[in-house]
Image (tube, rainbow, N blue to C red; front, side):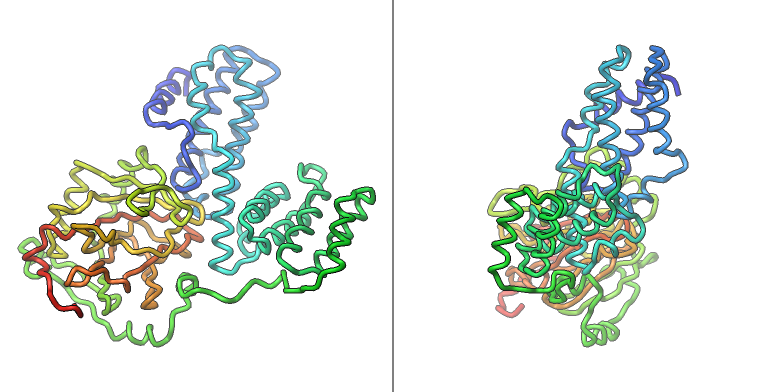
Length: 486
């Protein structure tokens, strides 16, 4: 590919790139960044050749070796640890170009803005690390468990530990610092002194004082002149407490247990008695000769799954339309919407699109509800350890969200279930299917039993699309009730 051809590609980036764009909250955006980084490396490599800068000719080809054409980044980011490592690698490579190579070239000056917009920020690395810690909390994982497929070096593990430490998750911080200590090499930028200090502090804050004394003594042995270490050790010797920092807490909320697949046997038995059928949506003419496959996932509140509700072709179109427009998902709180850590994904509302219109028509057909006041289709892609913690979809406003239609646009190997903690039900993603439930009782009151959550994605790339259906327009399709109990 010539410099001219790559210039056309990079000019497209000017249109769709957003300086300071967030990457960690969408695994798809990390995968897209992989291709963008590779193209930038090629551009700067050709600029180096064109300007015949001998001292840099071998550097960029070596960097490019890490971005193989045969490697599928979408497959790589299915592993959250691999996604975290990839973010770190791309940040380091792009910063190297910005600081060491680009200033020495004249032909590539025009790509400075593109370069700036593609560099993952420290917040991306910390956000991805926080996602790994969330996975450990929900699925009860030690560092050795979560890194079985992709290991981390001492520096990478140390950063995860620092994030856990800053979040006051001292047990996970300690375990990551210990993991890092085992992997220290002469090439590590992290030092043994740093690790021993943080090991001592994290275990002290956790309360396991005998272990804290051990690491404080190790720290002092390494640097006998360190007064800070001496004071810390003397303080520890006069305290008493000893919870086990090496054993993860087995206590869990119902939400966490459901995410791990720990479903009550009574719930499973009740689910096995539920039914499935072919449905015409109450006699809709468009479904008379092509009824939909309807499965009852739960009876109260009624949660329905529709199978094969959207085709693979429609899914790919929706994903491709959404990609350039994705931005951090927000949460509605007290009349305003803003990004919060309880929801780690990127999303976009799709407007005036024929595929979206067709999907909305189909939703109206199968549910029997009017789409006239429904919100546009919201397409979402989850990030590293991406989740949406417990919430209700109803906003408790006039013309509230009467119902939710949630479409699964991908399979998820491990994690990513939609769980209803109050009733103890978990619904697992199945590509092409959708689940539907009413958020309100027939009397218009919020049905709090519909509180639900999207579990953290452990392995996979989770895409969903939401359609929130509102009350207005349903007067004759879903009549209200004056009964307190309905």
